[in-house]
Image (tube, rainbow, N blue to C red; front, top):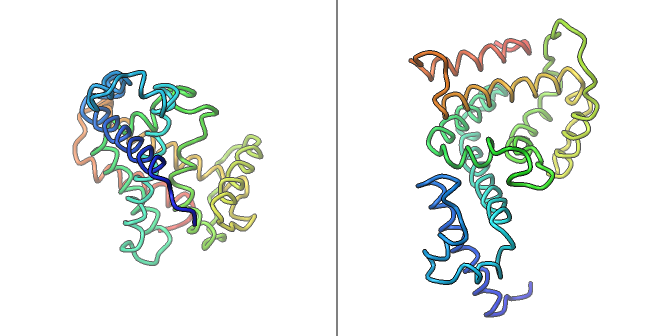
Length: 233
């Protein structure tokens, strides 16, 4: 392995320092506070000097998204092992950990999962795929016989979503049998994400249309409803 030169090490250290300051600004003051000028002021350099590291504020925000997703995936993985061996125990553990993370990191959640398409990433690849499929994929591979119940209506054409999921799994080196990516399974996975994301986003943004009490129980009730839809107790 080729060793980095002194200049390369210094550049890498400076890039890391820039991102650390940017993330601190995000956490403390929100996305709008993350500007190259503010970061330069924190570092004691001129704003134009930052352009040697990032072409634009948007590029820096995209890098922050990548850093946050990496940290989130690592955080969720720590909850998989202690959850036990049962398929749904592992899935529930990941979902609960995601909710706890989102409530504890509202600004980071907002940047990654609630920024308008195209504002923080060219092509706007779904962050759900990046964060969750590497964790949920092995569960799906191990449980290809889990069969979602019929939705009660004719499913739309989900071939594009099936292809995206198959590619995402392949990119992460996860072998998922074809039956685990059938139309009903993909519909269930998308439905699960919509319900999970919707509930968490309403909590994070304080947008529930009623006074939310016993939020943990309400969230768990939703998870059990979704599990029941695929025939699991």
